[in-house]
Image: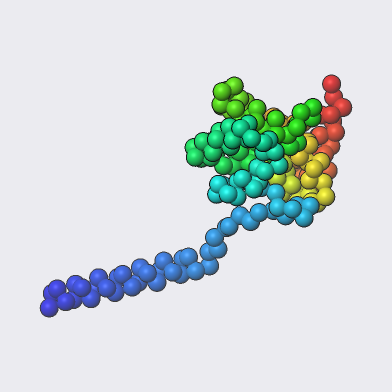
Length: 198
């Protein structure tokens, strides 16, 4: 009888605990960050890791070499993919397409993923990380100031120009307690002042 009453008490306590937990979490909504739609396109700070076939489809514009040269580039890219650099490779391809001026983007990309020249470890990964940081800062500005998607490219260009201080400018413009009624106007005023000051 003592064991039976102890088990009943334990079962009652467990049921009460479960009810209490359900009532505490009943009104709580989990925050799930949604990708932002800007200019009709989905902009991601860091690309989502892809399978090898999906990555090849994305890299195709910068892999327009042929023959043995293409096979060498593909081997290097496959090795980097196997090391877990899928998102980095995709961003490096985007950078190659945007930054290649004199030579084709395929040459720029091949040079950037080169292990032999040391570019991947010393230059490319640093540039990729810097790109992600700039994108993150630009999206933070867009979100906090509730800016229209039409000026995304302008904000991205500002993020590149003021990469060291953009977030500080944003925190000044959105500082609580100073009575700033138009944080976006104040932010762009700081930017304008910074651009005109030598």
